[in-house]
Image (cartoon, rainbow, N blue to C red; front, side):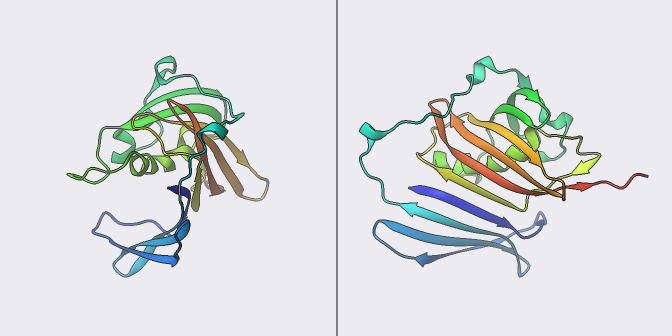
Length: 207
């Protein structure tokens, strides 16, 4: 099972065919580290390292003090294309409850398959949505300040179920151009992990 996914985002990628390469950095029967790179025209755009852990029967030990989120049906619908352009955002269904700038809870799902014509696991489908966390509960208007994430690290304690993926998110900006988007991950069964994104915060020039 996937215990951790750590993406380094090395640059934007064009809408062109890409190449994927996967290698095993640390083989093992109970713990394994793998690396995947996505390359376009000879340039690496994303590098991922994932820890794979052998499952064990620990149902009698399972538990968490993390708070549950209100269910998707109890959360108002929200149109993210009001704030963000692009086909990916337009393909999502979002329910959001924002309590303050940079603080809120969001449920996200999509009917668009991760890979056209291919069946993927619920974990892979959920991972395809993780990066939305940084844009759903912004601290400031993105027309005034840009705050892209340069990485994304997710830790999981179990596999997500299909359907809605929840983010209980807090966005923090420091005084020197650094930021952090921190989210507790949920599905409709409860908390299942966390996502952290390191931000570079850049006020747009006044024109």
